[in-house]
Length: 349
Image 1 (cartoon, one colour):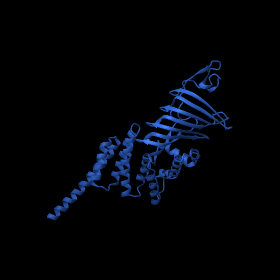
Image 2 (cartoon, rainbow, N blue to C red):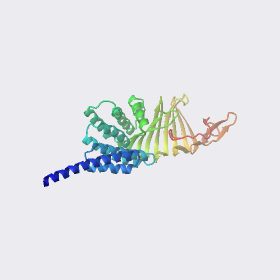
Image 3 (cartoon, helix red, strand yellow):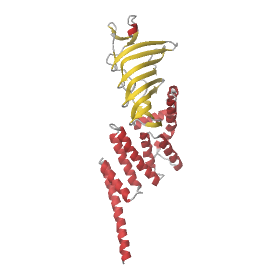
Image 4 (spheres, rainbow, N blue to C red):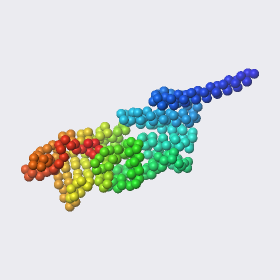
């Protein structure tokens, strides 16, 4: 009789646990839909306390952390990355329990992109291949598989200072696929080691496309320190090398650019000076490297991106920016733009 009571008690407890799990899962989903993320975390964690092998609870927990990351990304990238790390832990637990779980693989591909963890992304693609998955469920991984190599190659070229090779790689089909992914998912930043990262950023430029690359130092998940800023589109290339602070160009910069809009005798335009919040500010050396091997150099001045006009030709209503040292000879750089047009680093004007 005593044994029977014990068995009945255990069975009753088992049913109670199942009921608790069902109730907490329902609550977790409800809170998630209502964007009550803190309560959703509590609910899913209660399920895990009752059953630490419950795949659905870990998936739910990962979704909550992702939503929290998305909610704060615009204002606090460092905090968002913390949430993404928690989401990654939840999805990694799913794959530990269910190695073939395509949903966890798909979500991890996005999170590793946000975290810039190229090594884990490589491993994930390898696991995907071992599992022999197919279909549309994880097409994203297929795209990343083709992008991983180009990311590594660009990083190696940047580290070697071989910017011509970077521009060459930016013309490849693999880079275009990577660029499409960046435009769709935001601005992925990949950890390249030694405190440096490689990020792709959607931008608006007239001549250098809608996505540019930054390679250099990061601090608290934002560009800070020395770095390269590069763009390429339709044969036009742009490279700025200098200092950054709080995610914008700030301090000394050297810009080298070639585009079809330059004079047909000019090979490259080189600008050297200081920027503030991405805008040229103060004296800037404006140099044109000619195709015949010669150079033309003009020191000009900007006030927070605006040309400092030294002389204006009233006949044509054209503003001339005149080199101080050539003022008497009336030689200088000419601009037909209005004085209100701002000049600065591409993508930050």
